[in-house]
Image (cartoon, rainbow, N blue to C red; front, side, top):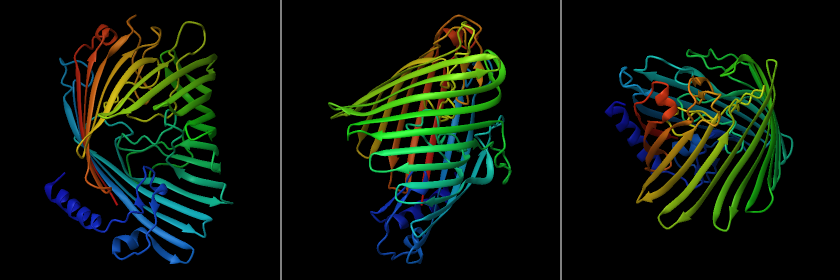
Length: 441
């Protein structure tokens, strides 16, 4: 980023910061921003809540995210030149119209650009597109209908997530019916994922070879005990696993149990998948456990999960992570949620105004008969040996939030290959760095 541009952003941020209102809070999905401005005594406050009538408001906002990302030995082989770095810029601008507490129209433009990278993937570049564009109608305080294009996160984002880590978010063209009261929420969705293209307004609607149907029930039993119970049905043509390529039609039945018990926070999830892959039956599963506790020095936690891979029982046992976050195990994003077993302790602490996160992950293949997949669930490392251990990953994140408008983050990861990668001819450590600046308004 040029120094002059950064100075301009800092100047604007300082001006806005001096006018900030305690009832202005930004969300990951900007349609959920909390905006309650009693006295719009500045241009910025008027922009955030422009009152068109007694019952109609129009709000504008957006964000700019700049990242520098670098890899050394991205494919674990220093004999080949795999040292590279690139620059990512993401601009987002939205407008949110609310009428009579009944009607909402939300529109969000996205421009995700990248320079200095040769081999682009779909999550790297989208010059200009509608990231979100939907109409929502509130039948009552409990029932609402949404139609249009939207980012979607279900539960903890384990199976369906916004994909915030990469440069281009994941959008769905969908119809959604939602019921919600103080303790219960039920969501019914039929959605088609948007196939991102690199150009200007070239992301077609309702196109592609995939579809997702969802019935999702969230129940808050007590203040400390909650469950998500769901069924997701995904169809995908010409899906490639280690076992081959065929049409994949599978249902995922899941239970998430989360809350707090005797000072321990927990978030555990179990999913079983069944269906068909070509002429094979599908029998796949995952179990994930996450506990953490707060101490005087910070938060200490442990994650562990088992994710099934293919075996030799005549069925396809490879778990499909559906639409997970791109940075499933950090921004380094080398391994995806299929055929894995991992142990993941982590520490988060505060040093003055700086937040520090440290973690370690050990990875194994759960099945020797299946390969290793990337976060897009594309087969990256085929099963060409009988070794299980994939490697060790050490990671750290240092972040500083100047105010609600501007924050900075530096993340670094090192992966030391284990026996599986070494026996595949990939034995050199991988180094990864990414610096992020994000400005919201």
